[in-house]
Image (tube, rainbow, N blue to C red; front, side, top):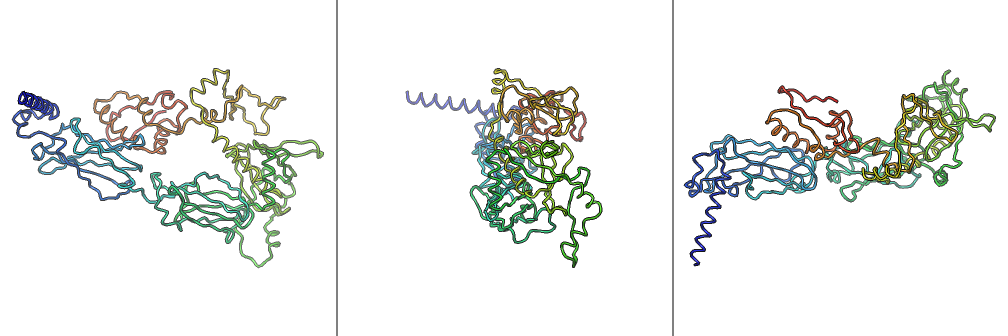
Length: 568
């Protein structure tokens, strides 16, 4: 009985191996698919194949990489590769939905049993390399490669390095230390610790705004390493005023390293804190408004002279400048968390609003030197929607710091307000929330038509401007989602809703598989550029690719050797 069971088990194992041999050997081998060849071991055995890596550890991301797959028969002899053999190599990121395109090449050696795979890793992280023949894994596949052990991040690229949690204008107190958190990255956006060994390569040159030359001796900096491959730059200003700073790495500016610094005294800081605490109620500053048609009061390079500073200042004021000084208009600047208003008073009791600027990142300040007549610090305000104005104010730094503090608070509120998804949007509509976009005629922001209650009146004549009207409080996040769309581009969403039109079997199967493999390796910046090239916009609507109208279509080119084209 025991012998019978052993015999049945042997026959069952033999039949399963024969079926596996017939199924995976490939019908193209014809007469070689015989029981005799199986008994001799002359059939491809994926587990007998070997993989050799063509790089020395460690390697940097972005470098061409490759490995070789050596195919063997079960009996150990080289397996000659045919043109129809189904060898598949799949390389993917284990944490991100990212695939790496791979090219395969059969090496022209006498044995013809070696396939070379070439690829390039651009994103750091852990990768899985799967190699299969006829659906069976080759060798010890899948293989796992970690970029931290095998593929090191590249050198620091200043164009990709950023200051985290940073604004374009900083408000500091004289003598108080401020820390900049720097995230060094390589050219592919991978966080790198390469710069931690070269901390002295980070420099922060300063120049006082409105004054020609560098501000020497007014700043103390210290650079050290922080957590998570961050670089900490401790900054201390020893002089009050407005400065322009540029963070550089090895002499090259980082991506967002150009910013302004307003340095206040203790009294000025207390005044700014009081203004912010009062939410702008009763906050105003007295100053002067220059004629709008006059050019900005920008100082030029000063030539060396033996005359006194007072004589130099008098000489620099030509006839046009003196005439301009005589036309100064006394005005008052009112700042609230929402807007900056410039008002003039008739008979000292009747206010008249001249200009209004929103407290938003689009409103830019240009700091100018003192005016020659009153000696007050000057400032140019420009929002890109109306002609810029130039003003001078005794407390210019306090006014600019108050505006900047309100701006930072508005940005923080916007970032803390979560984006409302489609379900929440439908819920808002079910509560009777009506959203409509009203295009306004071309007016300056201070002369928009309003009703007695202060609401903006929409008119049929449309030239420019947008106004969102709601009957319920929905949130800033919904406005941002509706007006700007989504910034994240998912390749899976792209592939699921893209429509492939026409083309041969080779185009639909081979070329499109290459296309999706290449697109899967793109960074978000490269995906945005692809979307910009094809649709004219670098961002998607709230519904993603499914909401595109018309849908994203891919059509094969009838000719070879031509560049891709896009029709929007």
